[in-house]
Length: 129
Image (tube, rainbow, N blue to C red; front, side, top):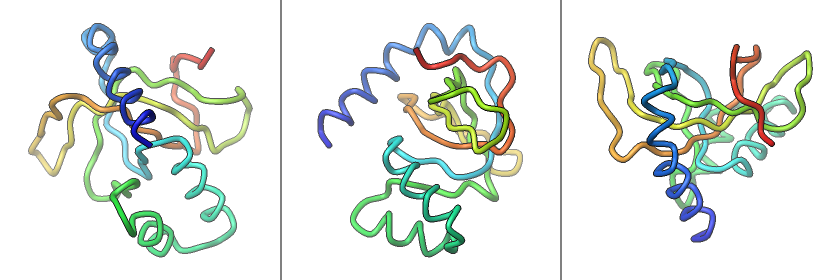
């Protein structure tokens, strides 16, 4: 887990230049600290489990996933993970730079990597190589 956290921190630091060039996007939905956590949540969600139950169990020992349904996560530099298909869900990794609650925008310092999915693809997202 420590290696994964260090890799995410390094990725967010290396993405600093990309942040200035990539437009920020406000998004809502499920956000996780790792792709593995996102995959675990998606499998259970697609099997019909209640999202509140999924989150309670995934976050039992530490906060690893959040459902941003009343707030917006402002992300930049989204990268599509996995295959480029024609139907969702589409998984992404991006840099979380701010959180918007109503009219209030709170910057995240330092920016952090997040993993999320969308039912529709994000236009112009880079593809993982």
